[in-house]
Image 1 (cartoon, helix red, strand yellow):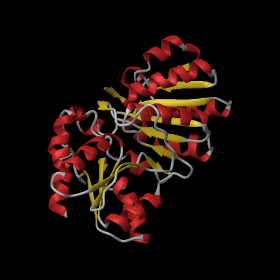
Image 2: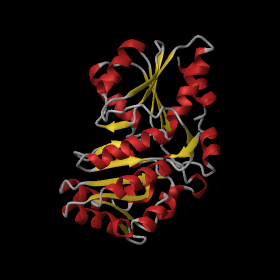
Image 3: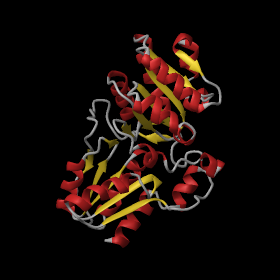
Image 4: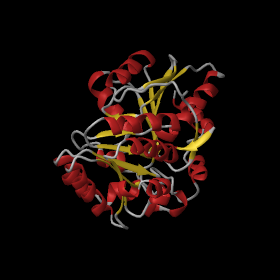
Length: 307
């Protein structure tokens, strides 16, 4: 079954908000993009429409949080992380507000709309902020679990998700611990570390590699901050080669986080697969994925050639 993570998020948020009147949703004219229409219709007193003004949306959210509300401010990732960077820095982080930043359509989800709507830099831009939890779910099950975690846990957080429907990877009974990676497949020859929509292609790539005698471990690094250094060090020590795969720039994202760990504690070769440091092509997401080799076949081929 395939569902978009953004839909799983809003379904869970509505259920939580119906039980807790302190949960509020704020959006800068993005209820359609985020799929917040049902929330706005059913809980109008817990919904704020800020208009096309991301800075105002974040500022309003900081004010609501100062009044004791748990606020989910929801917007397309390129605009939430770009236009409101200063407001996130001051109104949310500096004042330690209980604001949950929800960035939908991350990476190249808006692929055909081009550079203005791509979001290859949000992880790099936000992960340097102190005390900001940063999460990137890979399927609907994980998204719902992390939404519950965000509602129950105080402090500023950012959750980034794509726009497309994605395959279900986890069972309903699966549990997740923020700060701990999930091992999806064991292997001894190489480790694939992925986040978000890249987890499923890596899982399938590992199956393709196994047919050729290459045993690949697959780690879902859904928690970018706090980051599971132990899992990275263990993978480096046991498989000796690491490959990171992300729908993000090769600068400042998952690959950089992994290299920051390995360079200090367990130096091993690391290959970073992501968006190049340059202008990204425009096209529908599957076309962009194919172009950059983010399919199971493309990832498996890159790994084979590298090792």
